Image 1: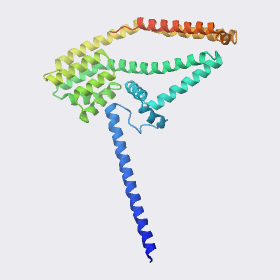
Image 2: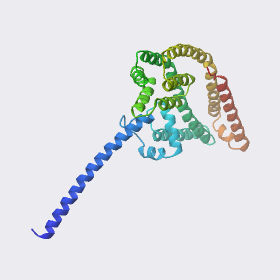
Image 3: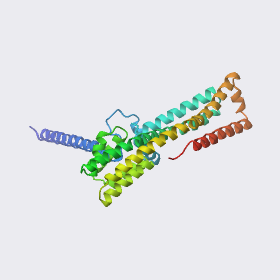
Image 4: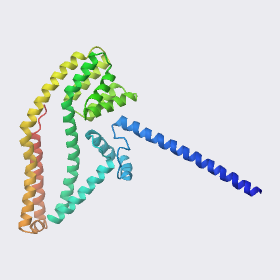
Length: 313
């Protein structure tokens, strides 16, 4: 066998060895990357990857690097929705474009940008509504949570163990949030940090009182059973009071959303009775100013009625 052939065989074997080593390194790195993503998901409360097929991954990757993406991620984490910032961003843009086109086609071109702004506001309102809905559900579970923690503490269990047990026994959203707290504690975070982050993620007076009680008992030591049992009774009473207040204010909140819809319905009816009337009205500067002033008055009325129907208990 000639020398060039031996050199070629040796080079081929060396390339094969390097390829195998590179493949093993890539596989090991990918496995470590997946494990790191799972640990970060546990720490931050994100949904671990692999639960379903994610869409718009490129947009999501780039968006997460921006301040807007980080804010969207924080808002989504508080809602418990199985969405990525990229998915929410793309869906919001699609809804904005669709509403722009529909408003421009059925009403007048002037209403296209107005509908787009309303769509962006609706996307933000949707996140706020989902977050508030999750907070309300969590507040309703707080009496049962305090009861479980009191019983576990009375049985001699540590607070970490009591939180893990409550995460297993309670349904969502309390079970999911406490599971996140338990996983953070397992990764080495302190009880104060984990509970404080929980209170920041789902802000409410009831949860702040419970977290403060647990944090102070963890710092100062001593028994916390009596405090938790008294807190359970107080939370039950506040739960019933909140339910009565929400029932009494439901009519005011419904009216706040009904009045803008009546205005929109009036415009659609006017344009259907006299086709092109809105386009002619918004074709002049005076008409555009009148429409803008009308929309502003509806917004002021909506905000005022929402403030009247918002009572902190």
